[in-house]
Image (tube, rainbow, N blue to C red; front, side, top):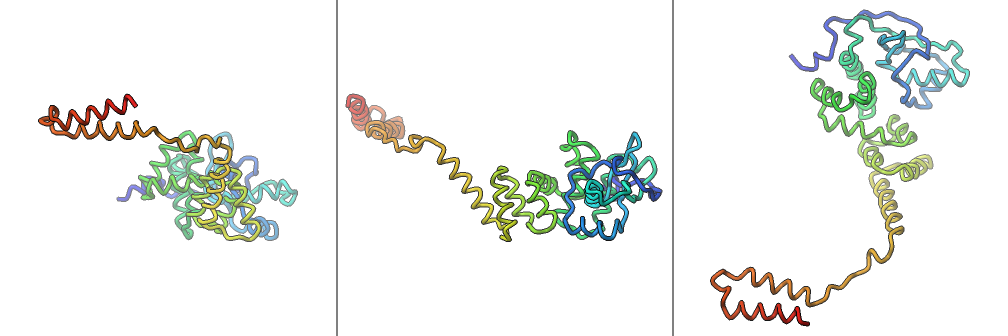
Length: 275
């Protein structure tokens, strides 16, 4: 039996539908809903409930629907969601409260969607949040071992959390391919801000654009260094010649160490020292 099954509950969890207060939800704070999703929910309401599990203290962990939860939270802040609650399917049972099972449920729900790097990252982030960031190293290995996702893939996805907010939104919306996003995530904040502006102007971001930004950063750093650092320093000719002569002496067979050739080379070394 596949190790993937270890992530899932022993029996199908019971489900109840419930309106939950927004201030009792966890696990959606860093989600980045698109403008289209925000507007769709504002006009039509929540068409599909989110999926949560009960944790402790009367709180709930979002398993599926992080962007929908965040969009509704933003609408509530704007005064466009007066209810202050969100429609949710609550997974019940002791198994559903276990961190590893919540992670498995997240990936199981994720697997029903069209896979993409963005959706993989969102699923992995949810699993990490159920265990806490301090447990990230073990959780990465756990995800890889029990889902078949390579550890390197998990780590590459997680590096994308270094994207600036604007680039992350574009990545989540499918405007930036994973390869470009991974390259951009390595850049400092000011270079990512430049890429954001280029994207906002209608430019299509490519690896070449990211490389240009990186080269610009390297040039700017170089201009701040003293010119003397790059000045050519000519070595004295004696140093170069002496090095070659010593190498020649060491290359002689042991039987030749007392030969006239060895004496000549040694005298040449001495002459370099006197010059």
